[in-house]
Each structure stands twice: as structure tokens, then as C-alpha cells.
Length: 513
Image 1 (cartoon, helix red, strand yellow):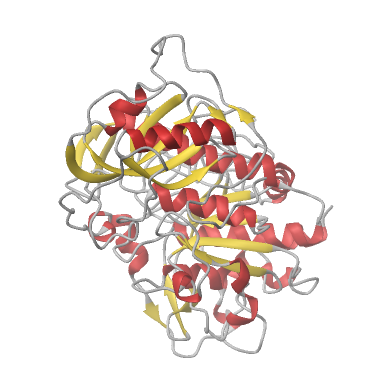
Image 2 (cartoon, helix red, strand yellow):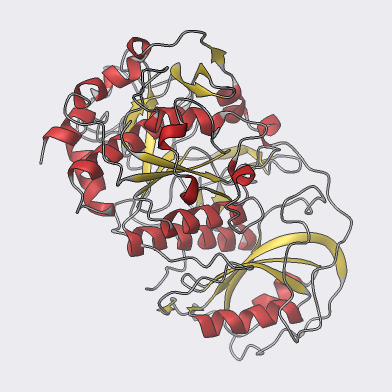
């Protein structure tokens, strides 16, 4: 398998299949050796085999390192280079040629970029790693290198939700004391209630919820949570202990999980695919951040457990849009993209993602004033080379939000050629913490409806994978034209910037072949 230098692609489907991840320390998973695209002609010729710049103490930072050739031998070689450059390895993925590292050497990135066999290197955040961060000091120094990540002055943790208006929207919950299935307008809108007359979905189908964790003893979720497939990824490697995937500061993942697969058990609500299994893959920190190292771990781990679908109701921090023009951002975007493409190309996973809640035209971006959210956001000009990840990565199913009236939710991002399908996302009733129920609004609530419909599709088309499931999803979606007189919605009734190829149809998923 080869990886493009630039993760941006033609926004249409890529068939997928993924890894069998090692759960040993360092997460060095074993997989097929895959050739990575050769460096461009402008790359330095005759790079040294080992880093040569001096190690200079500075703040502790995390990095992703992209290896030119994705195989164990090459990854091992660059792991040793990481140690020589004054770093420690948090995780290494042979299958995709990505290493997550930590270092307090201010020359770390420059030193590795000049090392033979390294494609690119990027810092995963702009703030130093705080002592409270789950990745602080967890890296392993490769043997025989004589160096390791020191503990420079820790950074002060920020709060992603405080800097991101679109996340504040989804943090608001209206508690409902006595929920009933009849109150779920969203299930009726996508005909999930009619689909359930045919099937609730199959136990063989697993949907991984990459989010803030799922309340394991919630009466409407416990029957469908696959605890063996659940894990926490906050330290950059999967921790399968129960506490590692439990929610701590956010009910976001619990709400998302209920929309996908709340059980049909006479209690509370019913999910879109109440017969399917869900796994909790915790990637959201207590401060509300989804850093690249957690997202990469989440994608790779979910695929290793046999998940057919992942739901991703977030964007990767600290940049709302990761730009090709910045060496760090491009390198990290490439790392995340390698993980996403690997799950799609090697395991047949369908990755579903929320479009975002800033009412931005993703096809015509101009300004980002919300990044970086781990330090002080700055106003910067952006273009098509700046992408919301994983939302805009090739092959990912990007979902916009609709209201109970079938209109685009006012907060929903949009964009012709970017939005794939639409689903209900305004005032969605679902599960929350302490065994409760509440309503939330956001594209984060729309995305799990699509994940649920895909679970029904997979249940009725068990041999279909990745691209084929996506093709069926889009083909069966209900065409929804742009409203008359609207200037921001462009395209045809069959495919436009507000609704993509239409509002998803759960009944069609279980009744059409």
C-alpha cells in the first residue's frame, strides 16, 4: 500500500481494510510491509542515516513522524533515530509507517527531517505537554540510543471547549425526565421506526464510537456495549481497562452512542440500529481535546477489533483546519490520513464524521479564527489546502445536520463536493450520564444517525464493505434539493452542498438490495 504525499484527494470513496494491532507497550503493530510514496525531487539528497543536530533542552512536545517506507525494519530504524534525536517513542505503527514520539529537544523535528528514511515530522500541538496530560512521560526510549524525552517545563492545559464555539453548542444538554420512543422525531425522519419492523440490525456488526467514552452501566446502552472491544486512547496507545473508556467530564460520547444503538429493552429510547454492538474508543481528554495521537490510536485500534463502522463527531485539535502550507500541520495531517486510509483500504471500515457546527462553506474556506485552541487562537487566511480532519479526508462520509422540518440546521457546515449525506442533528433525544436522557444539537448528533443506518446496511448486506456500503448509503438517500432562493446551497437535487446526496434512509437500508 502506498500513501500520497498530500492526503487531499478527490472526495470519493476508497475501499478499505485494516490492522491487527499489537497491544504491547509502544503499540508496535505487525502488518504487511507497504511502500510509501517516494519523497519529491526537491527533498534533500544524501540525508544522514542518523540525526546530527545537537540535543538542546526545551519544552516537552509530542510529534508524529512519517516513515518513507511502511515496514517493520524501516520503522525500527527510525525509532532508533528518534532516540538519537533526544526523543522517546509513544507508539509505532508498522502498517502505516507512523511513529508518535515525545521530546524536549528543540532540534528534534529539524534533526529527524534531515534523517534518511523520514518523510515528514510535525508537532501534534502548539502548547507543551502538561504534567496532567495522559501522554506525559509515557514514551519508551529505543535501546542503545542513549537519549530519551526529558521533562521540560510542563505546559498549562487549555480547554478545547472554551475555545471552540461549535463544541459549546454540543455541550448543552436539555434533560428529559421521562423519555419515550415516540418522542424520537429523528428516527421517524429517516424511517428507522419502519426499518425496525424488518430488523433491528445484527449482533455481528460492531460500530466503534471514537468520542469521550460511553457510560458502561447505562441501562439503555449496557446490553449493546462490547466491553472487550472498548479502550481508552488518551495516552496514545489502547488501554482496555474499564475505567480507561468511561466518560469523566463529558456526556458527548454517551449521547452519540444512544443514537447509534440504544437497546430495544423497554427502557428509554431506541437507537437507529438497536440490534448492533457498539464499542467505546475514548479519544477526548478531560479538557475536551482530541489530539492527533489519540485519534490515530482510535482509528487503528477500532479496526483491529473488527469494527465495520467508526463514528467521529469531532475535529482533531488543536487546529480546526490543518494546512498543507505549514510543515508541522501537513505532517500530522498525513499521519492521521494514513491511519484513516489504512482502515478503509485494508479492513473495509466506513469512517463517518460530523461536518462541524460553524456554518462554514467547507468548499470555499477563507478565514480560521478558532485555531490553535490549545494556546491563543489567531486569525489566519485559509484555502482548499486547509482541511478539517478527519471530516475532509478522502473516503470519509461527511455528514451535515437537518432539523425536524427537514431543513439544514443553521449551525451546520456545508459545501458542495464535501458533504456526502445529511441526517437529523437538531434537538436530538438520546442517552446521557447517570442513566439519564437529554437532547443535544450539533452535527455530532447527525453523524451517529448515519453510523446507525450503515450498521443496518451492513446487517442486511454482510458481505459488503467500505466503499460498497458507502455507495449503497448514498444511492438510497432521499434526494433533498436546495431551498428556492438560497444562495449558499449549490448543486443539484441529487447532490448539493447542504444535503450531499440526500437525507439517509434506514428503511431503504434494510429493504433494498
